[in-house]
Length: 53
Length: 249
Length: 226
Image 1 (spheres, each protein chain N blue to C red):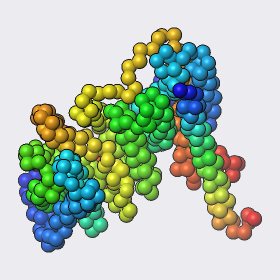
Image 2 (image 1 turned 180 degrees about the vertical axis):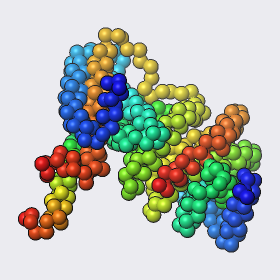
Image 3 (image 1 turned 90 degrees about the vertical axis):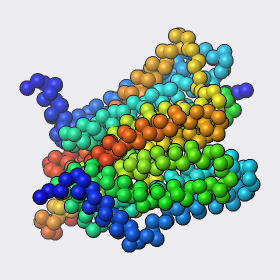
C-alpha cells in the first residue's frame, strides 16, 4: 500500500495550518493599524473642521 | 529594582509591548520555521521507514508535536487567564486570548493528521478512542473560549469571562480524559489505543525534538503577533497607537 | 438586621417557587422536551423492541441532559433582565450561597418533574426493568451535577441576547464526564459489571461541584456586571 499520499496529505495539512497561523495575525495587525489611521483622520477633521481633505 | 522585575513591569505597558512584540515575533516565526524545516527534512529523508508501519509513521513527526502543543498552549492560556483574573493585569488578558486561536489550530492539525494516519494504519478515519475523543473535546473547549471572547462587547470583561472558562476547562480536562478512558474500556472490552506504544529507536528521535522545538518557538511568534494586534485594537484611541500606525508624528 | 444564610435561602427559595407556581405550565416544558426526544428517537429508529431496549438508557440520559440544557436559560435570565441580579451582587449574604440556592430551586422545578417522568419514558423505549434503579440513581446524582455545571455556563453567558449555540458549546465539555459516568453506570450494570464505581464518581463530582460550582458561577456573575 502506498503510504506516500497519506504522508503528503498530513504534511500539507500541517503546512496549511502554519500558513494560516502566520497570515491571520498579520491581517489582524494591518486591519488594526488601518483602523487607527482612519480614526485619527476622522478625529483630526473633527478638531479642525474642513482642514483635512 | 531588580532588572528582571523592571522588565516585567515595562512589558505591561502597551506601547512597550507593541515594540517588543514587533521586534521579536518575526524572529520567533523565522527560527521556529527553520527548526521545523530541519525536523521535517530529518523525518522525511533521514529516518528509515518503520518495519511495521512503513512510511506512514512519518506522520508521527508532525502529529505528536501538534498534540503536545494543543495541550501545552491550553495550559499556558489557563495560567495567563488565572493571573489576569487574580491580578487584573491587562497584558495577561491579552496574552491568554491570543493563545486560543493558535492552540485551536494545533488541535485541528492533531485531529486531522491523526485521522490521516489512522486510515492506512487501522482502516478508519475516526475512532472513539480516549485520546482522540479527549482531543475533540479539547477543540470544543478552545472554540468555547474563542466564541465567548467574541460574544461580549467589552474587551476586558470578555477576556475575563473567557479566561474563567479556560481555568474551569484546564481543571476539568484530566477529569474528561479519565472519564473517556473509563468509558472506552467499558464499551470496547479492552482499550485498544489507536496510537499504541511503538517503542521508537533512539536514533529516530532527533527529528521529533527538532519539531517539538520548532513548534514551540513558532507558537511564541504567533502569540506575540496576535497579542500585538489585540493590544493595538484595544488601545486604538491612544496617541502612541496613532504614532505607531504612522498617522501622527 | 442582616438576614442569615438560612433566612436568605428560605426567602429566595420561596420567591423562586412562587414565581414558578405562577407559571406552572412552564415547569413541565423540560419533561415535554424529553418526551419529544424519546418519541422522535423511537420513530427514527424504527420502533422495534430489541433495538430500542438496547439504547433506552442512553437515550433517556441524553433526553434529560438536553432538556436540562434548554431549561438553563431560565436560571438567571429573569433576574438579569429586571435587575435583581445586581441586587444579588450587593446582598449581605455571599453570592455563591445565593447561586447555590437558586440552582437548588431550579433543580426542584425543572429536573424533579423530569425524573418523575423517566420511568414512563422508559416504558416507551422498552427499558429493561432491571436497569431502572441504576438509571434513576445515576440521574438523581447526575441532574444536580449538570445543574451546577450548567450554572457556571449560564453565569458566563448571562445578559447575552443570542447565547443559544454558545451555551451548548460551552456546556458540552463540562457535561461529557457526567454523561459518560451516568449513562456508563447503567451500561456497566447491564453488562453485569459493578455500577458502584461510576456512581461513586458521580457522587464525588457532585460533592466537589456543590462547593466549587457556586464559587465559579459567582465569579462569572461578578465579571459580567462590571
